[in-house]
Picture (cartoon, rainbow, N blue to C red):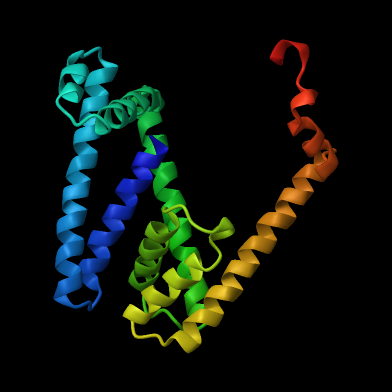
Length: 216
């Protein structure tokens, strides 16, 4: 359910940026059309998940009409969404979930805007939204470990569409990636130290012969 709401947030960002950014029509029109179609598809999937949650058995009949490979994927997605709807068990819970997701994306938008502004690369929060959109779509595709190269290419492409030359955007992309990687690594090490974990213990636990009797 969280993933589906993240997708909806990305679609909303795409539509908003296509309206407010001075991008060429050959870019904005497909963004709006595709964004609207994806948002409609997301709404349909959520509606089917709600029906599934209430015991509707027609999902199997609908899935049976899909091609062979798409059938289990769509049916599984609907079932997972239906299970995730437990987070919306009450109006108060639903408001909390939506508010949390909105807060997450607002913090991400503000963070990217402050970063870009510090380097003189952003004119408005909409610029940061466009960068988030391109980066979010780019890193969603399986690629290099830690998105090395992919993240930089996405940032250079997004800022290039906003008129920023690669000579300015590429150093920014490398610096930001290095800072994020170092921060996450340091935070992970602090957590490991707090739990008395070491790399050796983790490797030992991952060995097949380390499984307990009940796992063998």
